Image (cartoon, rainbow, N blue to C red; front, side, top):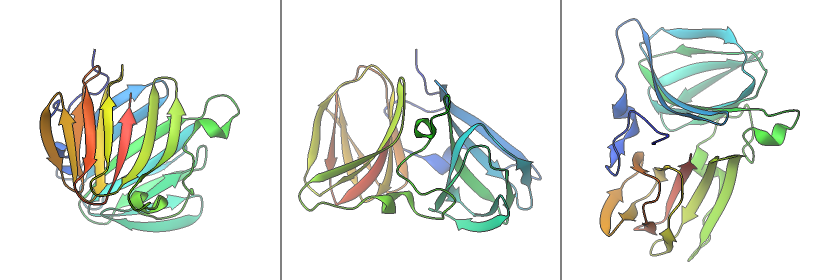
Amino acid sequence: MLTFKNLKNEEVLKLENQIQVGKNSVSSLVLAQKNGVGLTLFAFDKGESIGTHSAPGDAMVIVLAGKVEITIGSEKYILSQGESIVMPANIPHSLLALEEFKMLLTVVRIAGESAMTGINNIEKSKIMKLQDSLHYNKGGIVSKRIYQRESATSILFSISAGEEIENNRVNNDTLIFNLEGTLRVNIEETDHILNSEEIILIPADRLYEITGETDSKYQLIEM
């Protein structure tokens, strides 16, 4: 049974195109929910908002289109396309669309008293581009895990042009979100080219390989 939903398998997609802005409304589309980790797309019309609330998990926003004002505690942050921020667990926050706006929201619930079960290795309450949180190693591959739960994990990768990650086959679905550059993803001998801000969903138990067509950075989400 697939963990991810509302996405086509083994097809290159633009994530922002999977949800549309509705007039005077906030729309949402759940992509996955498993073991305390949730991924949801949101689309806001200009002026729409989510009021002040808190959540029992770290919440990471990646802006796919438009501009948003996010308030965390008493601090306000303005984010545009391609930028991200992590809203810490249990801290009041709110969102206001300054124009038509789309985002990917990842919520990782804190398990027990350990903050290490949330989102890690990314500074919280700071505007950044997710890909800027790791560097390139010329001629090599760099990885950074940003969350780990039972059967739900996410890792950031940088991969140099011409480098390969070979012979992967896992028991969970795998979503590849290309953040920068161009990737070639081979699934069971079929090549797929991913440009920046494109995704591909690989079902469980499918053999795949990833090659950097150029220097590239991507997020791998396995659930």
